[in-house]
Length: 194
Image 1 (tube, rainbow, N blue to C red):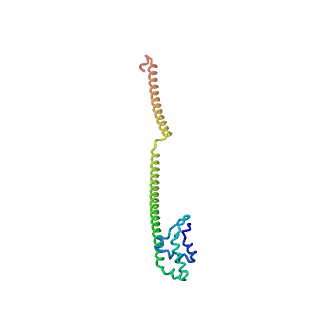
Image 2 (tube, rainbow, N blue to C red):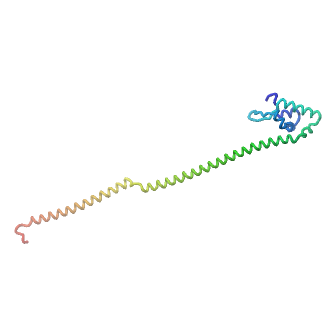
C-alpha cells in the first residue's frame, strides 16, 4: 500500500490503542472525507488518507498525553454506533437482495424441473401409444409370404382336384360311349331280334 494510506490496524498499532477506538473516531463525515476502500488480492480494505491520519494522530496524541483515552473513546459512542448500524443495515440490504435473487433462481429451476418432468411424461405416453399402434398394425399386417404361398397352394390343389374330377367324369363318359359303340358293332344284322 502507499505510504500515505494506512489501515485501521496500522493506525491502532501506531497510536497504541485498540482498533475499536480507531473505528469510533471514523464518523460518517470523517469516512466521507478521509477514508477510501482499496482492493488488494481480491480483499476490500478500508484505508485512511494522509489528512485523516494527521487528524487521528493529533487526536490520539493529545488524548494519550492528557490520559483521557477512555473518556475520548466513550465520549461519542452514538456516532460510532450509528456508523456501525448503517454498515450493518447496508450489509443486510445486500444480503436481502442476494436472497431474493437466490429465491428467484430456485423458483426458475423448480419451474424448469416441472416442465422437464411433464415433457418426459408426455414422451412416455406417446411412446406407449406408438407401441400399441405398432402392435395393432402387426396384428393387421398382410399375410406373410409363407401363408400367402399356402393359400395359393391350397387354391391350386383345389383347382387340380376339380380338374381331376372332370377328367375322371369325362373318362367315364368316354368309356360308356366306347362300350355303347362296341355293343353296337358287336351286334350283327341277324341278331336284331335279340
